[in-house]
Image (cartoon, rainbow, N blue to C red; front, top):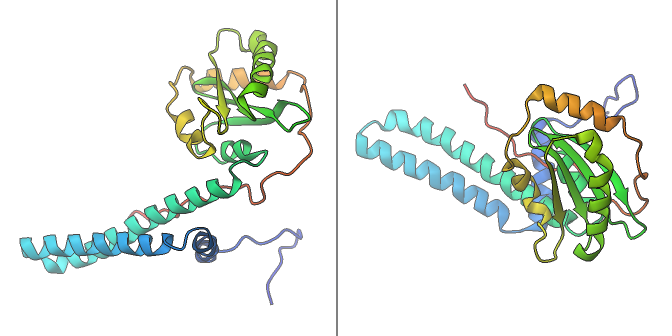
Length: 231
């Protein structure tokens, strides 16, 4: 019989259970994914053992190969799991917000600061690059939303750089699976203190809209690949 915390909240599954759950989703999304993970781990193990045979220190390289194979397998597993999740949420309203909210690092995400009845929306991200406005929707509809939001926050942002990023399938738009990588490549223009001050100014602005009602991707939390423990 499972135990429930006194506050009534659901107890989070353990690490191994999380890995099994992600593996099941990954198997359904791509039957070739788990064999690829196993092949990458085994291939790394074999390479390290061969090096040990050539050098003549097999006793040392066998355990090293096991650790290296496990680490490579976990990294590949995490990357494939994240790619499968992107494929599941791609094209759904709120997909970009799901990615933004689960980015690693010091990012402040405010969902749906602007939008319309078609469920096109603009999310605001504040970080070391400055202000990043991320839109979801067709290119011919979100341009006006981005322009209006940039004008609305420009006085509070002052001289801080404001970037706009369009997520979608149209030409010159970014696929949801490449959004995090794109944001991580932006230049670091602000210090942490300047980011905090900017956040305070922007949070004081009145919201132009509420989060539009509609289908939002289920299980929006992006899976992060399990990290091997460093000793």
